[in-house]
Length: 251
Length: 302
Image: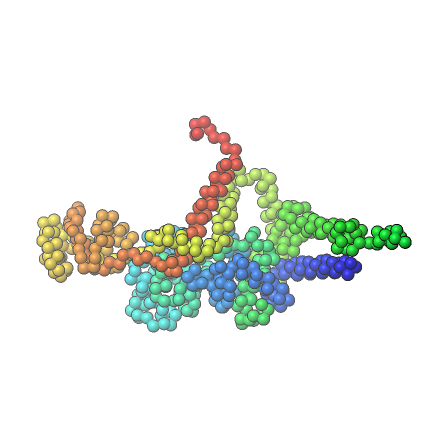
């Protein structure tokens, strides 16, 4: 009986010690700023396994369990080094986890959508943007193939270049089509495609019918600790500690 | 002898797991364990529950203003927005300045609630309505429907998921006196430009090259567009009298809208499904609010 009593006492003390350790680690994790936490191996060792559990429950439905995303849904691949919003810093990722992209939240990232140029009103937020004809869109597709260094119809690409400027595509994607991560405009020259496989048909559809992917805002649904943990897990998918190389050691 | 042995058996403490008899140590231990667990739960709830008055600042906050937290994540974002720096590299003065500004804002927001600013300020009212709508929509956005649900939605609304059709055609206008002859000439597959020249016709110039259906509809008008979209390649419409002459549409290339497969339309299907769910939820919430509210309306507006 004494043995059982001791066992229960040890169990209770063990639980208390675990709770204290956990509480202290969680507090340390959320008190640090996200980029410092990402640079601290101890914080990463603590946060990444816990973040993975949250990721699998909350994020994997769109980004996949492996974080590689889906090109039919337009959910980003989180394992590469191509960042649509921000520069891939832990703080950038955490901001997206908290407030989402085009989510119903006043702090969400919602500066621009891809207009649908095969519609009467391609972009209701900016009524000056005019529709394009099917031929114009095909010419822009050829221009983008050239921008990517792929083979294309040169004449159509030249026309497409003029249309790219005239339609105001440069406004978001830049004069050299290399995108702008401050507003979530993808780089169109790197052969990394959020939607589809980069074939003419998918590029045509993106221009013709527009794109506006959504990522939920988790603030208020996940605790501050959980948000930090899942952000650090997402960060770990593409960064090794202290470098920009992919690594899985702290997973 | 027998009686003595019975007494000693009765006085011997019963085993810990002998639940048929009382065990003093077991009772004390379980009572103590229960009390400890109760205290732990109460303590945890006391220091973590929303709205609980506490002197302990949660780790995820930088301040509590009348028990209202200022989140550390918001503080870091504010620091970055104002000074373009992170916490580690910010000076003590910058840190302090941002914190003081956020405390001031919180104090004024709380005062605004006391003054019931929402009842008089249209911007605040609009922001509150918007915030409630957003919170309802956020529930939908945060929960991804299954693929089966999306496929069912896609099948139910299949007509919506198609490409935009496009066409290349010529809108030829002839004087009323020569329209019938021009139609005959076109029917006999004579060269279009030759027929236009022969019968003093002209191209109306309304449509130029490839046009999406919606653009052709705007340029041609509803009646002529309806005639145009039914034309096969290389065919022409019946003459259509108009104040500027008789129009004959000659279709060069007609691409009617093509249905999109589920995979192709998947992102749009998800978007539309969520929009529909948000609309349903908003309507349901409004009904619920109306049901529980006590609304009195003026006689003349009933």
